[in-house]
Length: 427
Image (tube, rainbow, N blue to C red; front, top):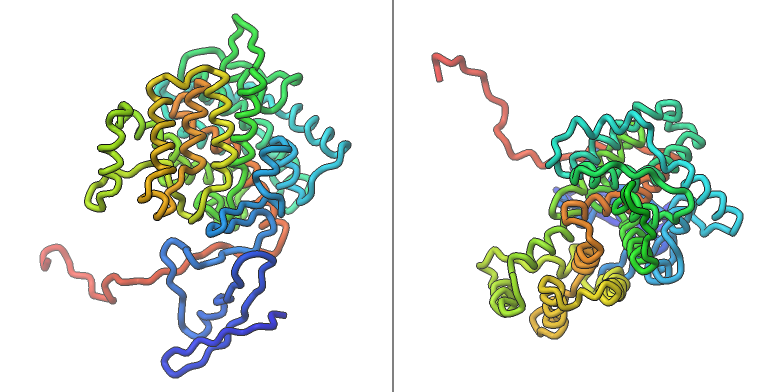
């Protein structure tokens, strides 16, 4: 039972509220019983509202901390790999050698998609946005794997998790191949998770592709850095959809739709659009001046973060990876990358950005890195969705595995009061 209480005084009435204690972060005032006293709380954007209890991911935006199951993101990105992180997020602990090998084997042997899924792609226009295709195809997976859709069965949930994590790179690469008119490339079991994705993206039947170790490691790190991020908009969407009892494929499809928004998953694509708008190094000072003007609508994309009021811990790792990729590919002097590096340098030294803590974030570096690897900007959010799938599944499974309630947010109604209908002739 909670040992601490908060007291709310309203209209001469005293209401006692329990204070729930966290292992990390601020304690939480439980307002779930307020409706019994005739009140709701109002928190636009959910800035101060905890909608669930979770043991998966922790963020301290003031200190620049991101933990997966207690492990710092910097350590995981440096020393681990994506499939090990997947196991951690799903199961709560890092795997031993036997558990890791078994998990990798299961994922590897679930990477193929049903042959009839190929037909879905033919229903889309060639110029369809890859995220539109992802939403449709992932949602349709439930029609092919309806044998394991009992959400109350832990074994069914585990199989669905494996299928989603394994098939997402295949589906994502097929989105790209369809858009450029190239044949789909089947996955190869001898490749790692990241290598397989690069193989399916850039390989063709005409030529064998051996993925570069540096590029494969960069993709693997991008996957790790984006695997989960607490209760963001898309994760909250997955949980809300899951609270209805919807199957996991429908819930993940809902999350992909939420991620598609430019304020959420589209930020790294917006970085590239911004760099193209600036055009050249000579124009940076003009755009910096515009960014500082509160009356100007121009914003520097990829700087600052909704949660992090310090340096984004993911950005430190991504910055190192970005420079490794640029060096390996020898593209430092290409105009778009030269512009990006100069903008980074100025932003890290400019007093305005330092004072407002507008540091380059993970989207700034991941967008540049993906562009250097050869991935088109309309695929950036698809890759984000691919990586975030494990986080969505872990969050969904955590909710389903414990007592939960149908999500039903309240509102502050400010519309008309009750009024009588008037027929058209009298209006």
